[in-house]
Image (tube, rainbow, N blue to C red; front, side):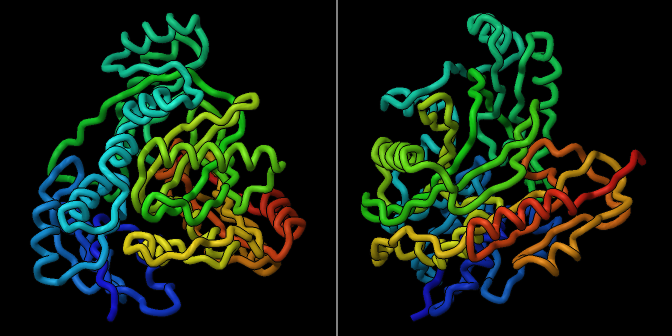
Length: 414
C-alpha cells in the first residue's frame, strides 16, 4: 500500500527526493503557513503532493491539532518536518500519533542553540564560552569577559546562518546587533504576525567546518556520512561549497564520526535524521549545532549521487523501523559550489554553459540578467549554485578547479 506522508513546511529538496524513490513513491500531504500559501499560490503543487492545507507551525501549536485531525481522515504513515521551524510541530504530531520521531530531549535541544550548547557542555563535549543575550550591552559584557577575543552573535531559533555575525572588535557590537536583528527571514516567511528571535553570543572558533549526517532507528545508528564544508569570508558565515564524502585523514574521520555518535547518545535520539555541524579547532571537534530535518544546500542530493542512497526513503524506513544498516561506502564523489557575486545588478553570467558541457552536472540555479543581488550573508542570499559529480576524486578536483577558474557572475551597482 502506498505510504502517506504528512510534511510540514514547503521543502522542494525533500519533496523532490521523495518523488525520486525508485519504488513505492509516497503520497505527500503538505501543511503550510496560511499567509505563505496565500502569498505563493500554486508554488507548492507537485505531482506527488495529494493535498495542501494550512495551519500555523512557526512558533505556534496550531498545526498540531490540525495534523492530528487530518490523520483521522487520511491515516498517515509518517510525519516529516520540511522546514527548521516545523520540527517542533512535526515531532508533537508524531508523538501524539505514536509514530517514529526523534524524542523530546533531542527536539528541545536541536531547536534552541542555547539549550544545545548547555546539553553539549553538560555531556562533556568541547564547548566555547557562551551566554544568552538580549541587548548590545549584554554582548559587550561578554566580550569584556573574553578579554577582547573574537565572538559570534547568533539567533538561538533560526537556521541557514541567518543573522549569524562575527564580531572581531568591540566597536563592531552595535552595528553587528542591528544587522543581525534586521536580517530578513526570506521569501517564505509568515506574513500574518511578527516573529520573535532570541539571541546567543559565544567565542569564535577558527578552523575547518564539517557536517555529519546520521540516520537513527530505535536508538541505533544505521548510516553516517561526513560532508566537507567551505564557509565564506567574515564577518558573515555563508556556506560556499560542500563535498560528499569529505576526503580527510582516517584519524580525523574517526574523530568526527565518533563525536557525532556520542551526540546521538547525549540527545537520546529515538528515530530520525540528524544533520550535525562541527568545527575543528586544534585536535578537538566542537559541535556547532544540530538539525532534526532534511539537510539543506542539496546535501541529500550529494549523498544520493555519491552513495546511491535516497536519504528521504531511508528516513521513512527508520521511522517505521524497517531500515537495514547501510554500508557507508561512496562509489562516486559529488559537490555543490555556490555562485559568488558582489551585490548589485547582474550584467553577466559567464562560463556555466561551458562547464555543463565539460562535466557531469545534475542541477543549476543561476540569476538572470537584470536581477538585483544582495550581499551574500547567509544561505538565503546566495545567488545560485551548481551540483556536479565525478567517478573519481581526481575527476571531482578537476571539475572544482574548472568551476573556480571559469564560472563567474558579473554585477554592477544599480
